[in-house]
Length: 428
Image 1 (tube, one colour):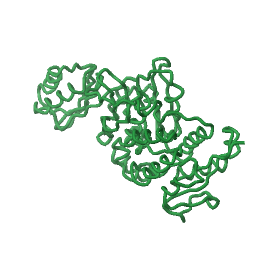
Image 2 (cartoon, one colour):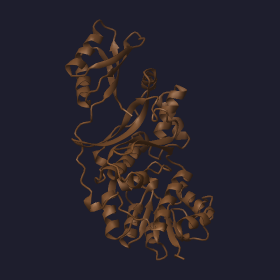
Image 3 (cartoon, rainbow, N blue to C red):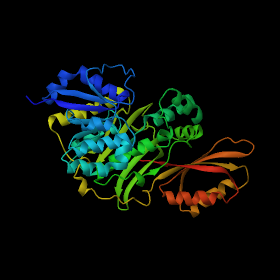
Image 4 (cartoon, one colour):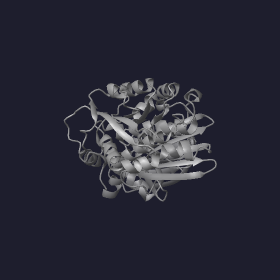
């Protein structure tokens, strides 16, 4: 019988403790499914005395994650500390330098250093597995790298941050403004210690960068993502979008075009009847499109102890079975540097603006849009106060550059009150 696969687990937070619990509970099942025993040799975390709800007394303890990675009785280093640099990266590099395999849930580290780490792993005949780094319990990495290996991927799209989806759906369901729901989500512990990672779209963009590399054979390019968070989405936008048959989502989209790799993470309108439009609460959804398979939709929990630990265990089981493979689907040396698309594919846009109650105000706006090459599909005007009237416009397909040109020109008309809002309408 094969010798046991010995793990060193660095990071004993929600996910790390969840991995330990599953390993203890399902040891016989995991052994039966992989053909070998899977054991924990040692663990590491910042506070040895903290109660984590799981018995750790039978495992060796290392205060230093690098020391854990270097232990002779550790075959696989399981990195669950987080952070793009610091101990997580140092310990991962130490493990790879010794030819040890790595399992990680660290999206930030892979988004920022994925190419260098992939080269280090492959040069050492080691592997890095990272199913848990993207969309929690949803097996999207395996779907792209294995299940859809025979496809040319045409588009990757999805809601990749449950906290943002919770905020946007809660705003609509309760009729509450952004600030109130943000405070509620923070109080419930749904947001990162630095909330900007969530609401600013950074967390989700890390995930998109990883998926783009795997889908299109490019080097991870987080810097090439057009990034906009949900901070400017108002309850007025959510209500107006719903009135016209749309929902607003923080949507990540990556697609290879003739202009280069288009990657964007931004609030978009999607049809309320679409799978993405029906997505509620903190759930994630990834849509994958390939030339042979067409479109598939993956939906499930994007965070939490159980779902994320489940994804970590799937990678550990792959290693136990002897499943290897290149980190990003093909040898790291063959990954091409992504050429960022300088412009987005044309799309319809939602515009919200407030017009001063003056004769000819609406005509001036229509003229400005026409001169910028933007055609109006439909328009609605709602009741107004003493100063301004809200106007909503849905355009025909156009470019973001033409929209920006029109918005700049509107500011010079003296009929627009405040800054207009422009949101892309994504076809799904």
